[in-house]
Structure formats: structure tokens, C-alpha cells
Length: 299
Image (cartoon, rainbow, N blue to C red; front, side):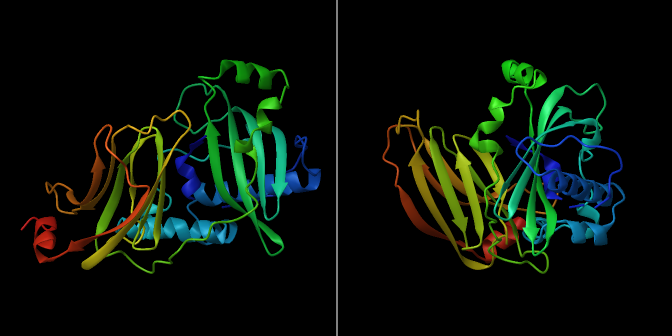
């Protein structure tokens, strides 16, 4: 599953005309959830901030605004600045609807069009929703490109839905609430960087920014940024199936300057070379002092 960029951002237009009913879902609910997404999409396309607030799950709104503040950007101008348009589901076939507790998924198949040109191939789109009180709201979307799974694409085209029984397509039943609500831009922009072949690494920065990496080399923005003085990094490391347990690994924290030409500053690092022993967990600290701040400012 590839989390599409438009998941950062919720919807309620009543559709006229018949819609396909998911095999595992109630027809009235699937119609309602589909309409919720159309409302969210309309809010995004028309850049209507009020409607976006109304139709986006509360925890998702908080996460998105937290992310924007953690990059010291303006909410109003950043929220609708997406590299691709949210796709219209009305050209897709609804294959299934799955509900668990306060969460639900709609699974679509067809030419998922992000408006970037060309003829989109047949792929999967999974929309996720959360029930708040007596209302369903849009949460996120996952886009699955089937280019490397031609046999799955052929099965779905033939109406064989066995692939959708995998856990990846099931709603979780729970909502993970953000650990912090940011009211304005952070003090300093920062990112985690992890290189962890054969391992899963979980990182927590200052008790508020959670990060999970699996068999990858990747960086993520630290929610809440970092602050002057003492900062904390907690991590856990686990070997993944197929991993040897001897691979090299790196965990870093970088401070990001907003001054043109000033490179990121590596403020923290835990690194092991190939065949070295890896700590299964740890709590470390780093300091942001006056000298570091001067470097960030290019002074």
C-alpha cells in the first residue's frame, strides 16, 4: 500500500443514480460513505477550508495541521497545495465495503485518475472513514499500483476478489490520536532519518512525534520540531522476518535551516556497522544550544 499524498487532507454531495454495492457492506452505508468522500473531494477542489474541516475526521485534521506547523508553513496556503488532484470515484467500480467498530473502508477498482495526464491503468483505491458520534467522516486513502501484480489485476478484472481478503484491506477498528495539538509554528524544523535493512525501527522524539520504519531508508518531519536546550530520542529495534540481524543501521535527527544555502545539521546519531551489536531499545538526548542556532541561521 502506498499512502497517497492526498490522504493529508474530508467530504458530503448526495449522488444521484445507482452505485455498485460492496460485497461485504450495507448498501445504504456504502452510498453514504461514497457521498462523504465526494463532499471531501469537492472541498479540496474548491479550496473550501470550512467544508474541509466539517468533513475531515478530527484526528486527521489535527495531524495535518500539526505537520504544517512542524514545517513552519502557513496552513491556509499549504492545505490545498497538492501535487495531484483527489481522484473521482464515480469512474471506478466499488468492489467491497468493510466496517469494524468506528472505522470503515471502501475498496474501488478501475482507472484511478489523479489528473496528471495520460490514460490511467486499472488499479486499487482504498478510502478510509471514521465515525464520530452519529456522523461518518473522511480519514485517509491508500492507492495500490498493480503494475507489479499483473495476476492480481487480471483476477480483479474477472471479478475474483480473493486478494481483498488480506489484512491490508481491513479497517483497524481504532483511531490513533495525535500526541500533541500544535497551535502555531514550531521553534525549529527537524527530521528523523533511519536506515534499517532487515529491521523495524520505532522512534519517538520529545514524547510527541512517533515514527515507524521497516526495512527502508527514509526521513520524516518531526511533529513539534525540536526546541532550545535538551531534547529526547527514544527508539526500539526489532528484526523483521528475512532479516539477518547483522545489517548496518542508522538513526539520526537533522535540524533544517530556513536560510538558503545552509545545509541541515546532524544533531543526533545512533549508528551501528555491519555485524555490530544493535541495542534493542534506548533513550538518548541531544542539546540545541546557541552555537547550533547560529549555524542554522547561517551566521
